[in-house]
Each structure stands twice: as C-alpha cells, then as structure tokens.
Image (cartoon, rainbow, N blue to C red; front, side, top):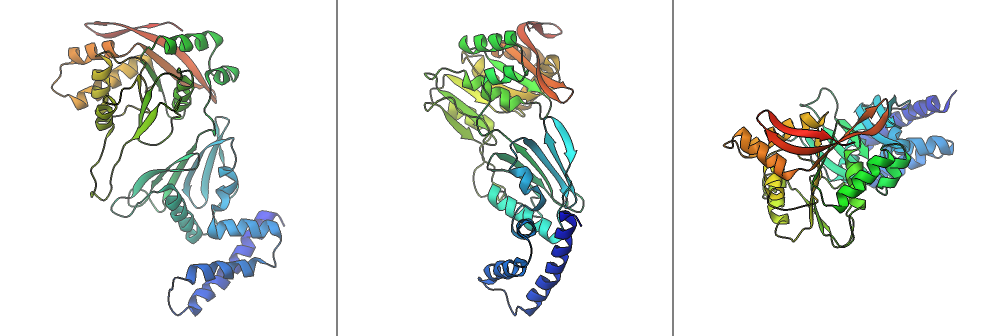
Length: 365
C-alpha cells in the first residue's frame, strides 16, 4: 500500500473519531480549538512520522500544497477545488498528484491562507488579494465561482533577478542587455509589456537593480512586489477598503502624492486604469527614467491599450491629444513573450513620432 493511500485511510479513521469528539462537546469555548488540536495530536501518535506530518498539514496547515509552497522552483499554484490542484514549474503547468482529503479541511486551509495573507472576503465581497511570504495570493469564492473557493498563488524569488542573471538564463541577449543598461543610464521612460506570467515584474525588478544608488525611486503598486534599488527610495501602495469605512487611494492618487516627494524616477507596477492619464501627464512634463508594465501582446497593441486607458481618465480628450501625450511620455517599449515554455525578451521598440494613423514605432532590437 502506497503512502498516499495509507494517509487517506488514516484520515478517514481520524475523521470519524473527531466527529464523535465534537458530538461530545457541550458548547463552544475559547479552549475548544486548542483541545481539538491536542485531541488530533494524540490520535496521530500511533501512526508513522510521515503520516503524522501529512495529516497534521491536512488538519491544521496547507495540506497537499505544503510541499509546493516550500519549493522555490514552483512559480504558480492554481487551486480550483479540493481535488483540482495545478502548479507551474520551469514555465510548464502540471497536475498535482496530491489533493485535500475533504471539503472541510479544504475550507479550513482557505481560511488559514486568507488569515495569513490578510484577505477579508465574505458573501458580499467574495474575492480579494493579499500576500503570503513570497506569494501573491488571489481568492475568489461563490457566488462568483461554482462550488468552491478558488486560489491562485504566484511566487516571486527571494532576491530579484539582475539583468546579468536574465541574460545568463537566455531571457535576453547580450546586445539587449547592453541596450537596457544604456536606457537606464540615459533615464529613458520604459514600458514593459507582455501576457500574464511572462515575467514583467521580474524584468522591472532587474531594471530597478541597474538604477544608481544616488537616484530616488518612488514605486507605486496595488500589491507589494517590486524591490527598491536603495534606501533613498520608497514604495506607495494603494488602499481599497471593502467595508467602505476608510478613504480609498488609487494609483492616480498616489501619482499625485509621489510628484511631491522629489522622485528621480516614477515606477508603476502595472498600468491598468485611468492612472495612465496621470502617469503620462507627469512624464510629458519632464519626469525621466520612469518604468511601468502593461498587459499586451505587441508594442502596437500596447500603445492602443494605453490610448484607451488614458481616455478612461480623460474622456474629453481627443485621440490626437492622447497620442501626442503617449509620444511625449514614452521612449521605449520592451516586449516579453513565451518561446515554448521559456520567457523571452522578444523585442525593444523606440517611440518615434505621431502621424495621422497613430504613434510610430521603430524596432531597435
């Protein structure tokens, strides 16, 4: 009998005994959770250490994903339900061989993860984002999903990539490495684009690592993912109060605050809304060396998306005004994409001029 089957059989036996335990309890008290853990611990004593460890995780920890969370090579964990778990490793997705043993232990895990990630969700607000250790965590639950809460966890490295390390793993060529370093030194405004999971944050962190120690960077994010280059720099995080009791602060609000804080460079983790207008207004008035990311498949598509996002913040502006603002504010568009399962820097475009048909681009790498 394999260890997985032994664990499941042991779990079923323990589950019956714990059900009887709760039936014998007269009322809930502050000591009930502690006594319940003691009860499970005592029941596990006759079992081998490996089974004890797995069942302890099932009842009180991360269950089947405990090994995935501890694996630095796992970059993404997707949980669609108790028995439906996937993970990404080296750019490829795999189905996890292990699963939660019951709906009850799965729900216990979800509550534990939300507590550790500082995510508050309920029936009225059934989704949320947070951070657990090196993971960015997203939770969405019924009624927005069917049957189960669903979890997405993206892991970032303990230490950010450097441009040299990215070149070593063939993310970029030596010529592209020189071009990016030159762009940072010349304080060009850079837009990093690509699809989900392609490494836009990793690329931004690598670019930040090349910033001079004498430059003050103000980074603006929804979730804490970027690594500041020096002690002179700082980070501003948006706030959204799901309970409606506190004032919300958007990326647009934080751009206004950042401009009063003497930044040498502005950095936005991701442009996804009307803050595009505020960012480009700042860049077009002389702020240099900015960096930001955007979801798009190509440089041309990125500029089209950027036009739409600017118009969300300024619907009264004409298309021509928006395009002039984009051309004034941006210097380079760095495109990332997948090559098989590998993440690659596919191209670098220079923003050239505004014509009747739109902003023109020139591929320089």
